[in-house]
Image 1 (cartoon, one colour):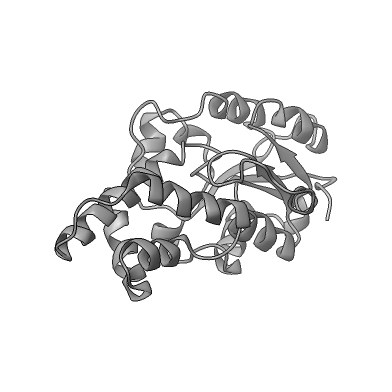
Image 2: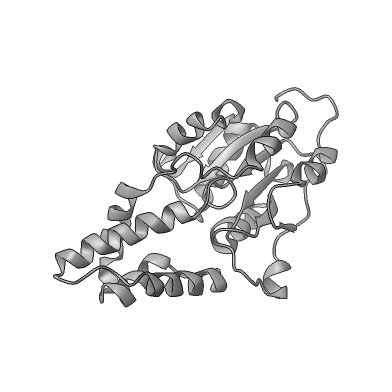
Length: 236
């Protein structure tokens, strides 16, 4: 797969490309503390959480919830409770939007359909509205609203249908291989891997070979995508 020759839609993951993934990790830590308190145990060791988190980031595969539940709650079966508890605390506070997001969206606006394609809670819409992102969004592919989660293909196909284009006319921008790059590529979308957040600190050559394009951040991404759009295309 290569980046589309005729680009009509760009979909972005939220955690990592748009907001700092530290927001998610903070929610996980709070959830772990609460569940451990219910077990009669003390707060979780923050260094241990980081170690497990970094291991999953390096592998770019496997369930973070299962790993955390197993190692820090002592029971893999608690992954579901950890997930639900994390959802209660997962927010995107002011100041955690990456500064390169709005410049990218301004450059793409009017040239392609812009979509959010992310495993997120419904409250992310409020955060994106507060931070000035919402006016650029044509397709709201938020898992809590749509009812499908990555990496299953349903969320991707839902977004493509709303954008009115085929997979070969779209690009997905995400920071994980397992839930962003691989499922998008399997459907025929172009893929951009953003190396921050849940991406590994030191990706391997094999990992870097998977996406069509790997970038450290969103700075300059418009320059790679805009030549593939119609010069004066309005929003489709």
